[in-house]
Image (cartoon, rainbow, N blue to C red; front, side, top):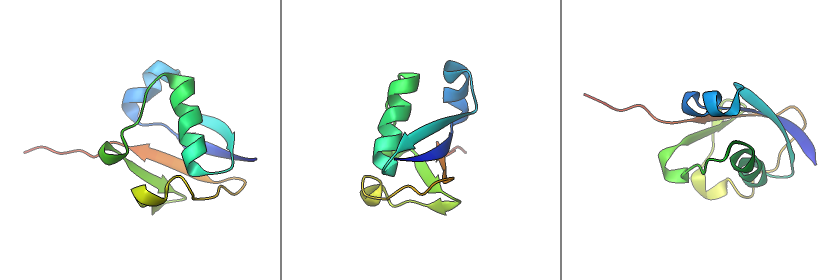
Length: 82
């Protein structure tokens, strides 16, 4: 397993008591499930954007993208309004 940093969206930071978590996993999908367990929130893939090392991840590939040591995953909730 490789260790990565997961940068949490603002609405999760207060609940987690941190702005980021260090997670050990093999894939982005398994890392995401560990974050969900740690903070008690389920991330709806269709309602969030996921960036791995500043590259947008395709939602269909999240389960299979391998993690390299030192990777950073940013979870963002898109903003909308008028």
